[in-house]
Length: 198
Image (cartoon, rainbow, N blue to C red; front, side, top):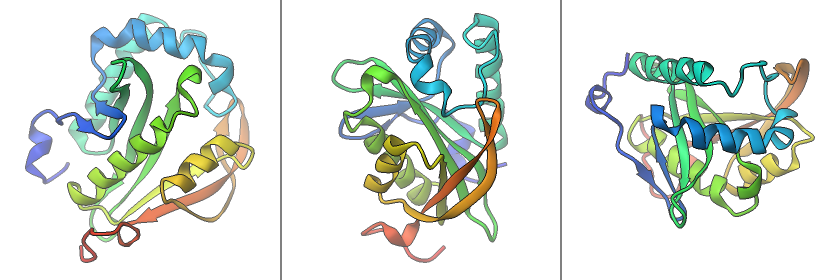
């Protein structure tokens, strides 16, 4: 459980230059399902295999419940990315596997709707969430894993200041098969003007 007082109330929206990060709400279902459905071919090769009921309302309710449970336990924060200019849902980003103590680290995962890719929205979202993780959660290290063929994601991570640290062999089961991933990381000392002691 998080010891920080803000975890006893709703997380405020986090704002970047182009995007706002906010909690998913139950009434986001239609917009989420439409965006994911129209982006399926774009997303499937980079994600765990989609279930037959992936976009069903019942699966959505389970997903929202899991997001709330993970947040209540302090293990993850799942957020939607909303474009400021249009107010549209454009993707999602999660700070997961949050660990405190000697580790003080977490892992970031994300997805973007196909029609919104290439606009700098994910780079903005990464920067906002990493700043929150370092400044508010007092984490020291944020990791991200990326399939070596995913040139777009590699470019986003590098633009957001993540550094490649190595190759994780057969790391995650993506779209039905075990895939190697590059390990990227950003530590608090990589950010100008942030604290260096934890």
